[in-house]
Amino acid sequence: MTSRSLSNTVIYAGLLVGAVITLLPFALGLLTSFTSAHQFATGTPLQLPRPPTLSNYTDLAGAGFGRSAAVTALMTAVILLGQLTFSVLAAYAFARLRFPGRDVLFWVYIATLMVPATVTVIPLYLMMAQLGLRNTFWALVLPFMFGSPYAIFLLREHFRLIPNDLINAARLDGANTLDVLVHVIIPSSRPVLAAITLVTVVSQWNNFMWPLVITSGRKWRVLTVATADLQSRFNAQWTLVMAATTVAIVPLMALFVAAQRHIVASIVVSGIK
Image 1 (cartoon, helix red, strand yellow):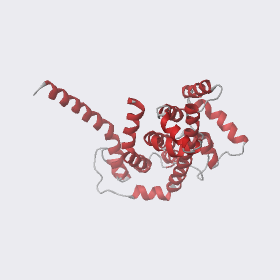
Image 2 (image 1 turned 90 degrees about the horizontal axis):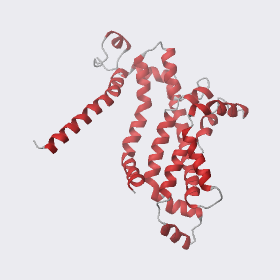
Image 3 (image 1 turned 60 degrees about the vertical axis):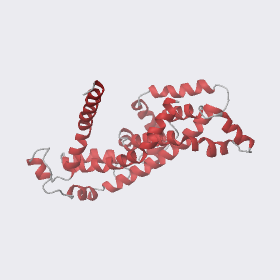
Image 4 (image 1 turned 120 degrees about the horizontal axis):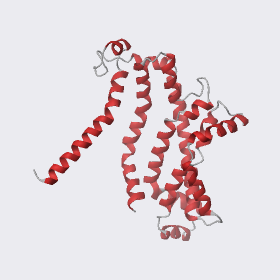
């Protein structure tokens, strides 16, 4: 065996071990979700369900978990739409338009990435309470739908790489700023927008702190809060909790599989160039 083959073998063996360590908790959680509470209490965690049961998932439906999933999906969709819209507009302004204090304003805004999200919870709560929006759907989405420093930074850097000749050609054809955005900028930014979509969906789908603080009761309860509530309501019935966790993870895994090609493309576009 050559030194190169030996090196590749060691690398792939290390990657395999890392993959097993990473995926094993998810596999155990999935198996546990199909295990009865009695078998889980009397057996071992590595024991296969005998027989597999869907009772945990039916119990979730009876506990109103479906409404929490619908609220989470609607919240994530509205925030994603707002994030993409306002991030594109702001990034284009910072990248292509000229106005006094543009660069200073951009870097001050980007500096907010250094501020922990927990610092803004109390001010945001007071704002929502004074507006009479506490425990409403709009309180869930308004703080997050007007763009984010990460998305605006990524899009600005990409917009600056787009050749001026394309934009000038569109201007010569009579295109205004909105036409340039819709027909030139956005089509050439699909990989970056796909990556921002994935990051936004994952972060908002898994958001726990803000929905826990701003909502109460079941009407606007999201998946993360509903899953945490299961642990207290059902006395740590872990088979039910693992079923809830599986329901929450499956959409994210499906999204990642569907968008992985665009994610790789966004790394190439924003990293190598």
